[in-house]
Length: 162
Image (tube, rainbow, N blue to C red; front, side):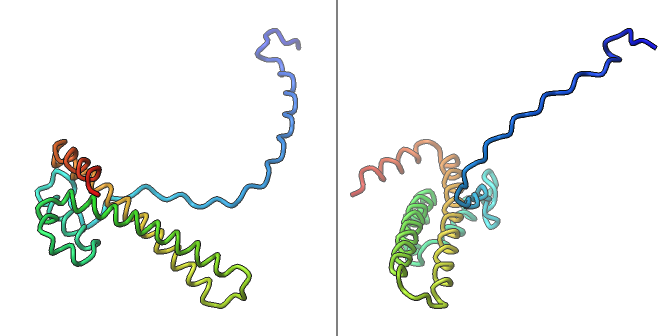
């Protein structure tokens, strides 16, 4: 039996792929943070209770004395902006504290509490970063709800405040 068509023919074997060069050992990757999730206690934008639920949630995160500032009750966007800045500072402070702790531990005998203390810094830093991203989501939603005039006003205050 003869093969009359090329489709019946057996294709020639493929040449072997050249081996990939070995990758250099890379440092262990730190897990990427998941995208910020909308806080469950805050109603969605467009809902009648959105602004009030956002204010309540933001006040729960803010220092207690901020509840006495009437400007934050009138302007939840200002509250969100200031709280985000507060959390930015907290993240930086935790980074500095962790670095100082690790530096202080160099060359000293380890105690059982050292690892737990480092873990506490790392947990708090992760919490502050996550909450900061959630506050940013709320801040962006409040920007949209308040309009562009509020955005310009907030930006102007940040730039001009000493």
